[in-house]
Image (cartoon, rainbow, N blue to C red; front, side, top):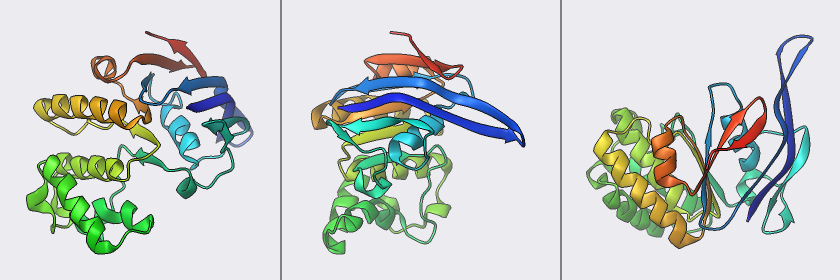
Length: 219
């Protein structure tokens, strides 16, 4: 289980001015559960995901996973996958090697990692682009590559920041269903940041709104 306990985070928009972004925020996400986080731009949704991933320090509070305090644990040791809104693909690698990257980092042989990457790309309808450079792809195609890369390592926690924003309506519906099924079957805890309440309700068993640094239960 992923647990956020009394998280505080502030930032300084201007010198001499401090703004509280997250205020005594607590949240638990059970294995196989997706919790959607909605809220206006600038409310701290993406910052919260980065704190969970270990990419952003917090001012106070703790992040725990399965009872272990991981607040100071390095991102690469958490076994979490974060899919950024801007994809964060590696421009010097082709599509196949972008997807295989996490497996190679885990110690798998490159040939075996590439084979698994090709199979994952097939599921996303991207097998024909395996040898293409990512910068040759459209925005929607890059997003599908990023989704494939996020899932291939079977992360303990999946962190999704507007994951389907660049996809057409048909593919969005298809991937919503696939993600919901994979998250449940793999027993992953998942946090979904989205502006789309319909998407949030389709994917998440619980929804919360982040407003003025605090979480409000929606359903």
